Length: 253
Image 1 (tube, rainbow, N blue to C red):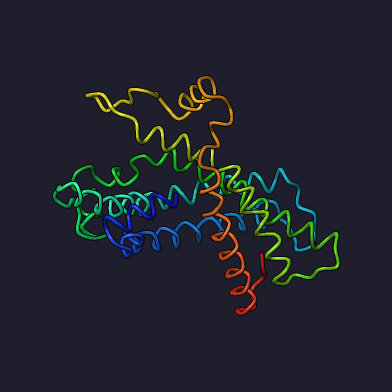
Image 2: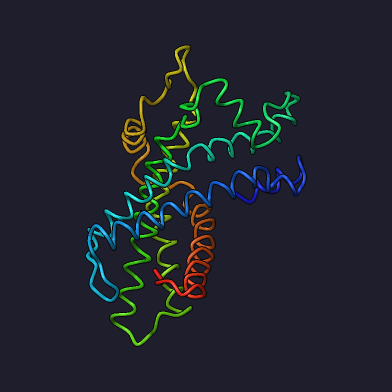
């Protein structure tokens, strides 16, 4: 991870670490907003959960998985455009002409080439990953916070939020790393003339072959970089979210 960052800085400059930030910000606005609203709606309307009541793990897991998958499906077009923008720096270094010149240019070219359905290209592995990540993140944060409030003298404050978000970031990384490994291998494999993968037929096929050929723990290659990314994100997101809800007088998570 650090070697890649240093390589990008040396070859393209420090500012290139933020390549595609506009699409990334839009993606997180759509994704984060959708997953939170979906989770709370399922929890409070479908299961009629009330503040302070015990909310079983299986219900929380169902809400987290559904919310994550749905949010990623909605946000998939912005994810696709973000990746295209981030690849432009490498193309210039290889002497290749730029494919896109900004967010709206990338959006227009994808629609023109593949139709609106093209905006969801490669969305299935991302949806699967998001379902697992939010099974870890949303479910763990909600469950950890409720456990702390029920079993300790701590109140619904910053300390409780920090402790809950630390748990959420770790479990989210544990749940999401195998999906990240599978997604990366499926998306980076060579394709035949008909666009079919030469190594893996599907995400499940990749999962089976990885475990069979390399062992179960091969699914956790790159865990540390993923955790390093998710831990500060989880902490920042949950502290910000809880504080905003408190400031506007809304019910906290």
